[in-house]
Length: 229
Ligand SMILES: O=C1O[C@H](COP(=O)(O)O)[C@@H](O)[C@H](O)[C@H]1O
Image 1 (spheres, rainbow, N blue to C red):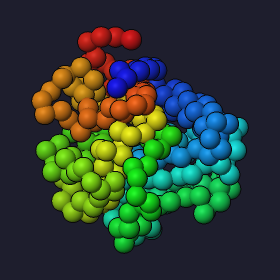
Image 2 (tube, rainbow, N blue to C red):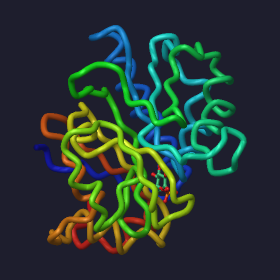
Image 3 (cartoon, helix red, strand yellow):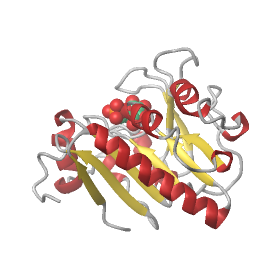
Image 4 (cartoon, protein in one colour):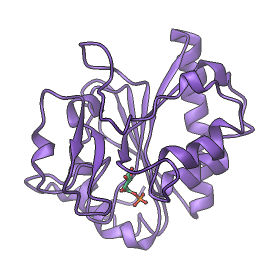
């Protein structure tokens, strides 16, 4: 289990730029080594960072396979939907083949196949309560060991019905990447990265068994870290 690698940039714009360069570098390496790049996107603020910074980058988009770390159980035209802004802000802009996008189906079908998938990269956000994907503090879903994707009907953050990757699949990825910006996240960033709390907060439970863990922060989100980078 590797220690988190933390990158602090002055502004959220610079975080987005650095993050997108990092994603594309990893994507191109994965394509060179394994032929495709399997990536999971999260909702929330990541949508803006990725849709703002990825189109126009140099990569073979036909080799990307895009999944979602979590999704709200809403219609595609709902403002709460995670898939639609990525479809409009990235997939359509770079002409990705729709067959290569795998939205979590509102009928709650799980991924095909038996084994635990190993994503090349999972792009994660962290809420001010320390949740990531739709895995919330104190929720029994944090202990899920069998399912790789699971429904939740009592999310404390609306909307209540969602579908989420579970910790076993998250921690099986080759590279987990958090992006958090703003002073509103500072307390939680400090608790997750330095707090050593028991039980650990959901975001602190993201520790890929055999992969890398990166945190991209702006100065506000990093402001309460005791160990400055
Ligand atoms: O509800 C959600 O929140 C988290 C965190 O979002 P952020 O806007 O605070 O970065 C997000 O990662 C997750 O995908 C989403 O469903």
